[in-house]
Length: 503
Image (cartoon, rainbow, N blue to C red; front, top):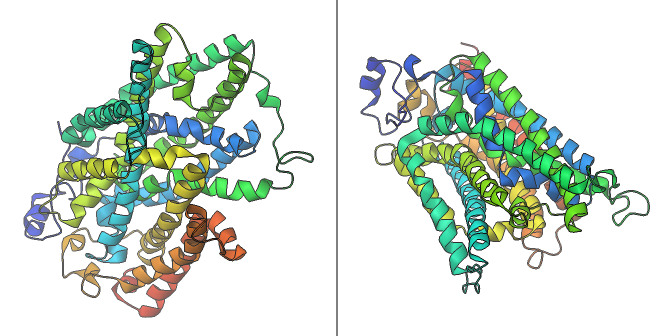
């Protein structure tokens, strides 16, 4: 059954229904909908963390030259950093019962909020496509094992993948439609019961790898490539900072739209404890599992295999089928929670009267196909340093503006009714808060030259070194600049928002 967010009270619904900014999916949650306990949030995070893309993070950093334990530490640090805005922005959802798309109206304006909602939605569409491609790849691998590689074929023009790969991608895409139709409650159900299964399977994978290798394998003790005499001697920090930024960027989308989940929390304590347990600990453990298993593959197969789909394709017996089913389940759980709920609400906020949560979900799924996600994953450089770092430069400023507005300007106080009023307190000038837009632009601009150089080196070969350096800290730079500019603008403008905190 679809979990629709019911309004706080009938009077709220009666007063807001005439507004173009209102629909039942965006309305503040009532007491009856606030059923999520801390273990629901912990299970949600276990479900999202245990996926192919997360598994590949530490391994991707080792490929860039880090030792296994340097990679694990970088992943853990990145997730501890992103946990802070996750908890802070999640506070608004738990206190006021509103999703991200409504929360940003307080800072960007009732119409201006559509800009950060759209930015976050497009990034989520890319992620939805990436995870769908990985799930489809798991299906493709399983079918090839069962049919003796009968599905192998030439790549299609322009798409650069075979017809069979495209078909498996679309099959996995279609499997997720059920959960789009049945809403957030069906996703919570899936995450809750699948989380224990994933933990058991991870333990089984480590057991299999270490028993086959006769121990942990030699790669774990291997030094990084940055040590004296190594291939990348003296280049650790050049790799570490963009790598750390990428780890923060991995969950940067969810740091923004976490109110979409915390709005269902029974208490503030439930969301804080659940997220503090559910995000950094499983992420660190999965990274350890990744490097342990990858290390074992050096002994078993003679080379490091960091792609779990590739690894599974080399297994034999019933374990192959079970492993790929689990990989598919893992990917689906993560994709639905992390990359569907947020953009579904975001697209709904663009036209509340015409786009419901369900329609927003279908828009997300459709755009994901058009973005051809397999091209993003073609290289580690493209995945980590272009995709992850690139969009973190975009979303970091939005996170900074949200936190400054909610905590420093407003002191966590919001008028829920006014958030749905086209001419109310949060309408600013024609529905736009120019201060937030200026802060966003200033937060993004310094990172733009570095992104262009990284993404299109042939077209932008001569970008000054200072901009490339700034880009390695993209999320941090964007968040800091936007926070400072927005805070100064709101304090100096003496606008409606500045008066709230002193009221």
